[in-house]
Image 1: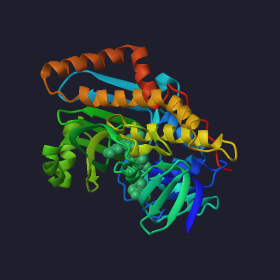
Image 2 (image 1 turned 60 degrees about the vertical axis):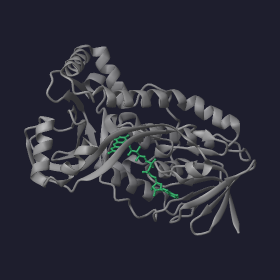
Image 3 (image 1 turned 120 degrees about the vertical axis):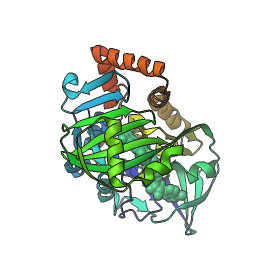
Image 4 (image 1 turned 45 degrees about the vertical axis):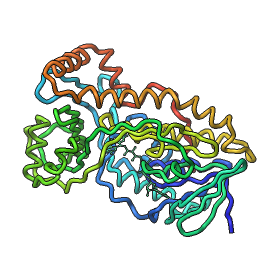
Length: 397
Ligand SMILES: Cc1cc2nc3c(=O)[nH]c(=O)nc-3n(C[C@H](O)[C@H](O)[C@H](O)COP(=O)(O)OP(=O)(O)OC[C@H]3O[C@@H](n4cnc5c(N)ncnc54)[C@H](O)[C@@H]3O)c2cc1C
């Protein structure tokens, strides 16, 4: 038997689950399918630096109360480079706000989303199951799941991550693929003695090193290393790893313990088209960014909530994949997507070169930015996620 619905969301990671949550109240029969049992939290050691705007959007979605106990405010961002002069300090007080953003463990985000979307009576939950194949015709898309279950939908949202099965089955080509030949090694360090609510972005010869505050005594570390050095870094024991991070960051404070390290390969990929026929791609399925600027989730959140906004605006019998909906989505999201991807890639490249001359030039740039308040504020606004039209969010009652 084939089941019918208006929209199927494939993938229930942070972005797919947020979309399901945000579609509450849309005049649509919605189904979603996630490979994992949805109540089972993913084993993700990462934390996300949420832009101030993203925190506000999560608040409007009614999710912040479930997240705020685990969120650590970022009041100051310090950007510097190892071995060269020059640094920039961005501060919340400079911007007249209490925080430039927040650091939230991914498990806390996933847990808040799971609590909201599990057992929702208005959504057909097909999890745990996975998309096996799909075929599209003029009126809809037929999806076949690995269990053999079939479902027909007017619109399929691909939120199934960087290796998107939807993207492959629909034949959406990858427009751009930049291999950085780097991995991000992620861990949490516990210790004491550093100032609270400060996030450090340190550009090192290896690649960027981010230290994000989780609370008074814990930092989330994202240490970017070239592929050639990965084996060595992963093999370091706890003391040697903490010493290396301490030396590279310039933080001479006391690191006491560190969690096991996990490595994530870094590649910037973007699909040739975000909306093709009856398929729309969001999150990592449409684009992955270098984590240097902490923009991947923040940008995808604005995409996903704009999509939810457009779908909620539809009349009861409207086609959610109608060309005017796709055109409106592109119009509302195109500029922000291009700007954020360009800035992130530029940053990742700018700090890669190791020559002394380049190091001095970058140092001069950092120094000038730090001295020149409008430049500093422009950078802070980018970090806060400001600058474009924000989606209208409706909190599920
Ligand atoms: C080291 C690192 C640090 C980062 N830090 C930040 C940061 O500070 N700030 C920020 O904004 N961004 C950050 N990002 C980016 C951010 O993590 C991603 O943008 C975000 O995780 C994307 O989520 P997603 O839901 O699109 O994809 P995923 O998390 O990959 O979720 C995809 C989901 O789809 C499911 N799935 C896969 N295939 C199928 C199938 N066939 N059928 C059904 N389900 C399927 C999977 O089980 C999974 O749950 C970072 C990224 C990295 C690598």
